[in-house]
Length: 508
Figure 1: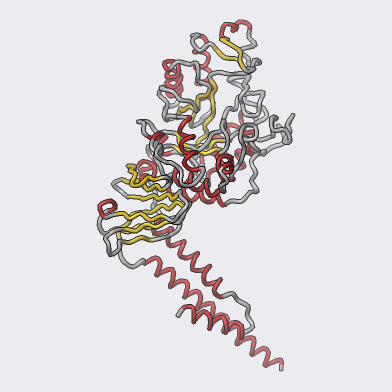
Figure 2: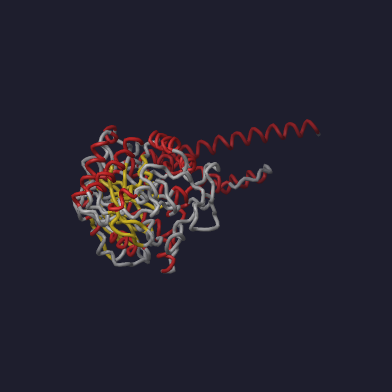
């Protein structure tokens, strides 16, 4: 009926001399309205009490390097060379402020901007001070402005504080009165004697002075090898005594009282699961088995890029990244995403892995991350809900996130074939239906008393479990609106046609 009516209408348009692609118009209009109603009916709203007591388990981290992100001001572009990957490229605090909307719209709640102390290398790996800000990045006032701007948009700034491995030109290393603070010099860097009480006190004072001066939301302690747990705990306590709400984490494994755990092996596990299809996923649960929230990621700024791994497997990196991001954002833990992942940045080792960000690339992955993170940020259950794996077989993963308020089913088909999983009322509840958010598929119980969930290869779907209320009212409303708009359009065309014919008759 619809097809016949559509063909008749197209013929009428042609007779009237109006070139209109009816099917394309009606399809586009319907798609837009149905998407709008789908979001209204299916996307959960944030509960009023969710913003009162956030924990690090509810955050997501965007990990970047200031120098490689965006050059917002030319006033600090001295001795820069964008053609030499080992040199400063010009990224700065002004650039971070310019791209606040970009990071915020992807849904990240923490921007981890790396080390920002005065340094001899673009990545901050050769610090010369614990008090001065790197002048290539901008001024202290500009840094504070970035912090305030991000905080106003509910994104906090996290910075790195290296406990060790500094430049031989570090202000402490050049002080002859502190020569006994140096334990060794390896790989062109100075290692402090972290058992020395004076060194410990100086590091604690430097870290707390920084927190007292700048209202950052988090500190990542780096280069902690050689520091015993007792001292690291003392640093953490001093930082939190200075600012109670401060997150303190590390990018190294430690038994200290960090707010989140870290395991280098976790990135290897997820990288190996998602770099190709039909991969062994038996180790999926290992990174999240501990008591603390875990940083979950597929690579880091110190390793090769996930894109490199998937390309080495002769796979299409954007598809692989969608699989990984769709799964990791829904699992328990704190997602940590390296800058450039959303544009499939490549590289085997730094500095090739630290490319200057290209903001002119395709936005498909960026939009995907926006959509998935939007769900996570709006649903407390997707951040903190109970986690249960229903299926985990060589790339086919189905798990639930559940709370007293809601239930979600996430299906990850990281295999080479279309997959079907039959869920039962015992798993979902009686009188339920599954409402797919990404691909908008709805699954109801069938005659065999199961919910047949079918998903094409290399796809992720996030289903909201809802009460099955029969007719899809939003769908019917959207369809009605489409036809009302169309009928109104036809009426306008008819009237214009009559006016045109009268004008032509008058001229004749």
